[in-house]
Image (tube, rainbow, N blue to C red):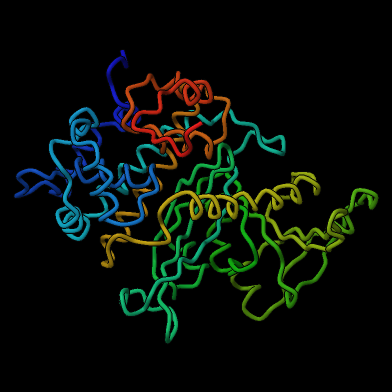
Length: 389
């Protein structure tokens, strides 16, 4: 079925075209467009993410190096950097955000049975943000400090498969806790975040939505112990308490009891104090859940290292959001391919292979499962001899 098709076109088969067309129609993305449609823009930008293109000129040069293959990759003609720049400035970024959400929904279904480090049948989310520094003179709309600009990615990560299910892009000024105002909690799910998100009025909304939260307590927390549960101190647990808040405003914002767990990490020898509204899970499970919060930190590190979201091809808010959402689409595409084809490789290795072979006409499964053999057997065309033996 994939005979004669480029690797890039096989990757693009994952994208639901009917969903893409509906989103383009909703936001009138192709209104008045003759040639370079939203789909062509999406292809070019996704190609840039998968192959580590550094600039619009780089994208134009790389695609122009093999004009005979463009048709087989889905392009209707050469890609001009000026045309691509105009598209990034003008085409509504929400088109690509909605397409990314459609891919995320499929990825979550594929990874629904992925095991967690803790034995739970519930959905566990990790919430955090990451700041991308920008140049203030080029991005004045994203002012952060007097001499700096930045955008911030507020991300909710499903820990089954490490799939980002919610992303809110802002400039660098909004405090992290404001994401709780736009987040729609799922009843029964567990939300893990650090103490920067502690605002008891907002945590009360999670409680009313019947969601569970796990966070760390601040040092200046005012509370009164109501009761204590027995602890096995050999496991690192110091105390497991039921408390009520006694602060002037906190007791009004959160009137119900909370659970306070003090835990000494045997590896780092640090003492951590957790707060949660769950009274049923074992105390060690609560500690393990918070330890898994680091998965979202690793996610940020991964996408910053292996995708193009630290340097942008455009300077407008629309261009920045378009690039970020297409980068997220690239991450999720690789995750979907890994699961669909049952590839026993990590995402980084798959992405590296795809970056080398986008123009090649090789069945995708064969490429991703036997890449070393393909690389060894691949003829070195136009290879110059450095030394005459």
